[in-house]
Length: 401
Image 1 (tube, one colour):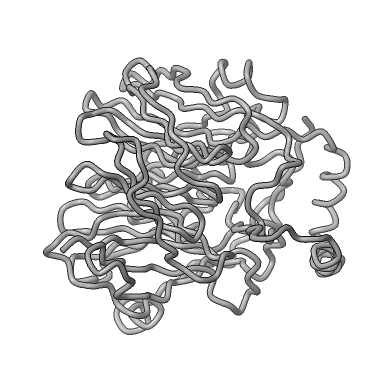
Image 2 (cartoon, rainbow, N blue to C red):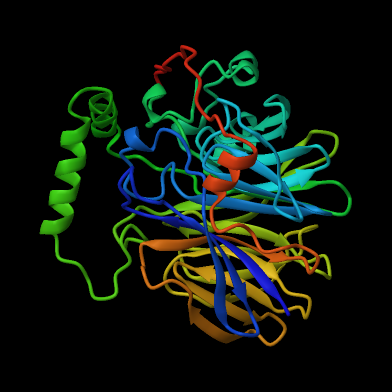
């Protein structure tokens, strides 16, 4: 029996509605056998982003008898009986995507400020990489990618990036750091999923200033009204890929053990972020080109592309290799089973009826693990209460670029 853990994120959810779930999917029975209510991230009530944003359940990491789950800004640690062991968050870590357990700490991709952060479970940063500080990034990215945080600001968390009111969105999330994998030699590959382009910079500045005023609710109302007025194509997924987006690039960055960084595999023509670097059993790797719906199979040592195969049409994100070598891939609310050796899709299953709820990450539940609880909210109320917000004053960043 093979069970898959699948995290999801729901678009266009109101603050009082669940924004994601954890599912357990039985591959033999081909059905969901458990749906778990998640601990919601903080500040959802002030997040005006109708897509994903600071919502839902994100990365899943399993190491030995422990499993870690992340929402947009907090990582929760459990044993194989799903007893809560700890949780951690830091003001400098937000917009989490992929995570990776490493002993008593966890690597987190912080897309909100383009950081890769190693956190312990006391809430301290042990190490970090600011992807904006590499020269080859500046050569390929627009002006919005230059560094904007000091070492002290990052370590002390003087800006709480979990709260969208605390920073100027026109200068954040310029590279969309969203995935990582460690190679056998200790090098780390990091996905800069999308180098952001912003031609209407002035309008975005005005929009972000209005978000901090009493007009924030008006902005949300205007957005909903415009969306209702515009024609919707048949089978269009709310908030997913759009044909009128500008083209940019995705890039994998190699972080060597000597702390030097090198540019790696690059994807041109990206309209939405690419996702999910995964190391395979034969030490080759895959990367999901979400714009084209392709799975890219490549050599992580020299970036040679072995194959690029179209497998999806909606929004590729989340991937995991099964023991038999085949691969599970998320395509919005569909689960794809892909034979990489034969380069063919074995099956495509509608996992969730609601197209606004999309797969985020996939992992395999080890055989000695119990099923997760039906409600992580109740679990933490009973065993380990969660506090994700404090009342300390934080700074608002105003930086000219």
